[in-house]
Length: 118
Image (cartoon, rainbow, N blue to C red; front, side):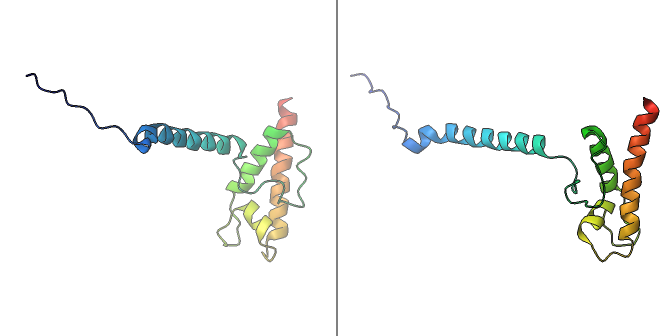
């Protein structure tokens, strides 16, 4: 008599669907990451919260450059915030008016650079 072939136990529904569910989750996370990166402006404090500074004279690339500069520069009062963060969130900063002037001068510098390169 020949030995009877061993049969594999049947997989449960969870075992059959586990890999596709994991792949869908990974693809969903990847899509969310790509979407988040593509929609972020790359600046923490944008022109929407920097009232008192006119960014309308700049095109999109110039505005981004000026906003990045304002977000990189540090407030000199010692609050350890960026210039843009201090202007947007701290109405009591003793240097707020000067900081607004510095951001306005950053916008002016971007416009001057555009005009000198033309």
